[in-house]
Length: 412
Image (cartoon, rainbow, N blue to C red; front, side):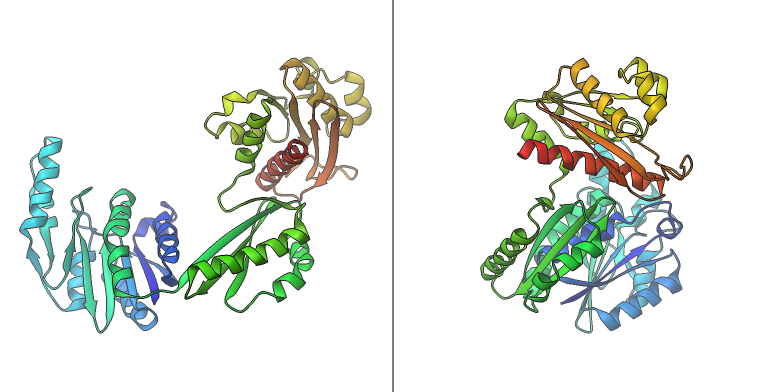
């Protein structure tokens, strides 16, 4: 069945609020085999909403709407739905009782404005909202299903999970669907595509491959559709194994894995510790590592040494090293990594230094020149990279590259 999502709200169109509702809803629908063919965002305007509904009806069998159900004058979705479905608002005692219970629990009296939230279109089926005052509404017209829900995520999500999706899956027999995401690092999208071209060409027509690049990482998502989920899973596993034979050295994880989590798991398993000495990444690697709960078991700390005098005074980089080779050099990051490892009494250390941009580059060391060093219990390795001229992307690429370099050392 084809599904369209309509998100209503001026705040979405001006960029004040990110439309996380639509991405979450699409993921949940996809998990049960309901195919989202379009996501539409429209303003809090009657004509625009009606146009969005009319156009969606040409494309989709199921139309899910969020937003515009609040108690204020700018929330016009209910009245607009009445116009679209040629009906009127009526007072619903069950909805009003829910509103009273919520207000009583909070110690407030129900206002006339909030009382109006108990008015719903006469021809809709009400969807309870235990987390808020605006009910959801289920409509059916000309073989299509329309569902309107609040735009507040903690109200919408339980409605979707507990009511809308179960009811939709009862009504429609959706395809079985299997997803598998392969996480790669160390190669660009076009080079990866060339490397796995023969494998991709051999995929059957019901298994699709999508390339999902982000700074420093390329995700490969396999999506298989069919009638039998178990058979699909077996097929996906087979093709995954064939891919692993081709690019095992580039794969660091699957699905929701993160490099910082993988590194943390390996360190805990080995009973070993880590510190970082960061220049161009400004503490971003330490931030990613400490975003994982329990990281204090293996991460001892970090020094952000942006200025050369800090590299000398705190990280023990020799003055002569900086004079002869510069801050962005193999020699400097090697000394940074070795000293932080010794100073913090850790088993491993990461050090970074580079020219993140947009300024500061030279002919010899253009913007995007990065050095990364990894100190291990037995050796120190350093590598140079050229990441481009966009500052924030360079910081992220440096971090994920450094973490993957460490992962490889820990996995050996």
